[in-house]
Image 1 (cartoon, rainbow, N blue to C red):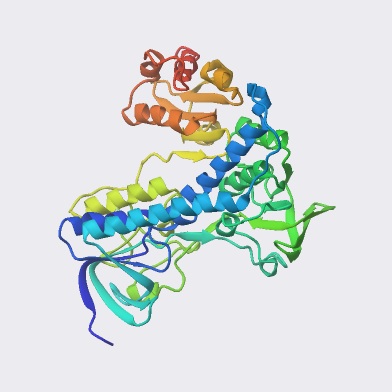
Image 2 (tube, rainbow, N blue to C red):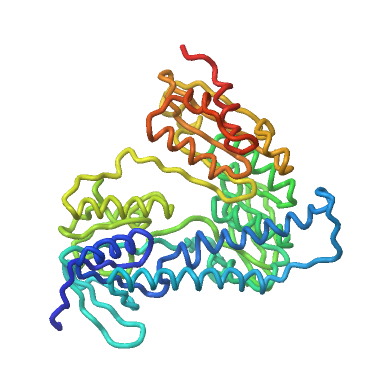
Length: 464
């Protein structure tokens, strides 16, 4: 074996956490290398978070054009050109990739395009995309390989049908005539609504009793009502027994619910039934890095693996599958590499489902509070109580807050326009340990969505 090139830090995978760690240490003068197979910057700017929200925005515009008469604006005939929708998305991605390349140049971190795998402790062999090989050894190594869409190989015919994942769905240049979505989670719901608004017939198939079934019943009911109102067919509580055909041509999905059988026919099939970590085929056994039963790299609260000097971050380490959590993983490892004792324990995990309207939550849901036997007072108001929604003709949804006996905010849920932005205000209050009365008594600008928080927290019953 050739003598390895030595670095202060080697990062396998250029996703959110890995790239920021590399840029940060390189800017401090450390010799740093990042190994990336294909997507500079990871999945978020290339094939996931930002591209999907770009297409969702196009679908929002289509929805507004369709509703234009409601605002007193008349339009003639109009069509959706998916090739243009795709090109807009691609231009954004190109700009993001160049932004990332600029970050590498100014930070001094070396970007190596190729496939890497461990061949010894803290030593990675890279098969370069343009030919040749390199052997890198890091004083510290960070694994940041992310995750990928899961295709359930136990369903007969599913793999052979060549289903779309979110990657291919965001590259379509024609509107699917009838898109069947397997999975009622975040990815499936966002793409389902977008494609429906762009002109597809859409059916969502979910094995559980409801869409996003882990949420409170009022949330799942509201999301289901939204989809049905937009003409999306929802099939829940069923098992997919087999798939026939080829996605993009003709698809038949066979489902069962007890003795009842339902066959759904469409033209395209989207597999959105979860994700699996990218930890296979990277030689972890040669590095002394262990994985758990789901394939995630085993880490402690400081994100250290079972191998000395090797860290793991983001999806592959079993962190919640969100880019903002991966960014926090970066901060944890950055500080710990500098001798700190920063941990993942107890951190807040906000999330936002980017349907229209959005669903956002921070802290406990009612279901979680009841399961943990945590007492709470609840306040809930319809979105129309935030008067800004009436000016937008976007009154669908509600705000809900759970309050503890000490007046601390235990949880906040919002299903409504700009939910993600409003949630951030509540999250800051929760982070600071402020009582709900701080927001209740704040003077918030009228008319804004945030002003609805005054109405919400004014509805909290007096504490015991």
